[in-house]
Length: 587
Image 1 (cartoon, rainbow, N blue to C red):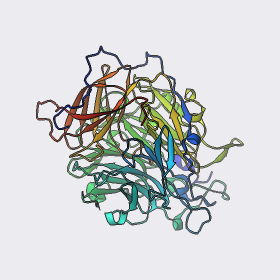
Image 2: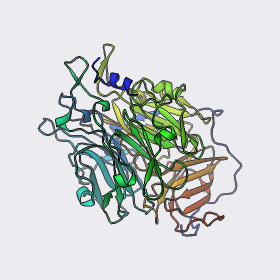
Image 3: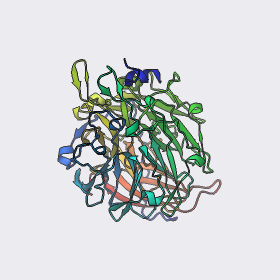
Image 4: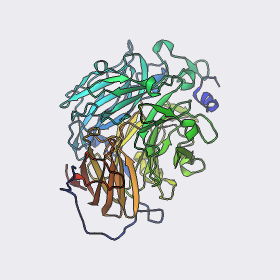
């Protein structure tokens, strides 16, 4: 086999003090969240793309020469363009390479009309832009009340400012680098807790059309090279100045890493110190874990923390990454998707800034061993109070296997058993989820307003797919819509703790995660059989802490940040909240 073939190379590289609208109910008897002893809910995801109005196909730009960027995209971004509470969808797209034939393609924005119906609003929003982009994030970077878009692209990164529903590209004016690069993913987080969101943009490898490397298995047919064939590229970190512009602080913050080959990234508070840290999935290079020192700089501790490699110290082909408190420890653990025969990494946060990959020998490891993993996310699909895991998989491109055309690979759905382990629920989730795809980005959101979380998958050179969560036996739920005052407007970076039925869950609001994608920012908690959340504590990025008590289930609660912080030995202040829609009500 040629030394540059994908498999051969990888096998060697391893509210202001007033509780005006709080829902207060009489004390209820303790009702425990569902666990391994409870009958499992029936998962079912149904493809409703055709009826939804989404009509989109990704353009890889492929023209027969197997250029590296063609295998990478696309991501999908969940955002709320009009701030109406309905999750909209932005599909990131490629385009034809200069001088190559084909129809022009652009980004695609689908606005949620309610009832799982979407309308193509790309042109009216000013997003009919043709760039070769891979992923991005959608946040209100200037705190003006509109959700803006940041895209990582081949060439230069883009900043699309939202002015009342219409977008304008202001990247150069705002201080984003105009140097040529292969941008991949975006994470927005408040690194210095000044109330404005900073940007971390992954750049995959050093690649240009002129420097593309021809790879082949038989010295005749070109195939896609892997990251091991190319020199790495450093990600970029932009500090938000708070005036609508950014400054490049990559080196000063400690993020300069020219040997890295990063794709997905996720923000998390790994040690609970109130400062947002960052984890990065790298392809054929050690994964990275950055601890926020709280002074504008970061320390890379991936190797010491146990997340840089596999359990046998092998560097893997990592693509997607997400963080979640799947074991109710109060600490975020990490899931990382990897290449063929490398399985998913499930890095359990043991505390003291140490993680242990517990996937080998489990159903999660076995099911993912022969998959090429890309998008991934923790979410509670059955609302039983335990975070489940979904992984979107797909080959580098369509190919033949054992004489038959292999059009893709199935996604994997893992149900959290509530005892630290997962069961593979893919086979019982319906054929629409298990259909073979050449998947890349994936995201979750409550697209139809019924409380549970639906799934969106974007395919390389294929369609965007909407999978409605139509399972039965789901638990009660609660969603928080966070509104920062001193913190950033969307409350990104806030840590939310919900106690219900005798168990406490935690979730951190984040923007940008998985593989080049972004899921719904508003935290959704499954409550199982509990009809009341006994206590909710929100720890804002600013340091403010609020609490709510006796909050009824099956609704969305808007929480506005208070300004004061907890005094030493004191209790969290009361909160201002606005109860919103109940389950199953119309939007």
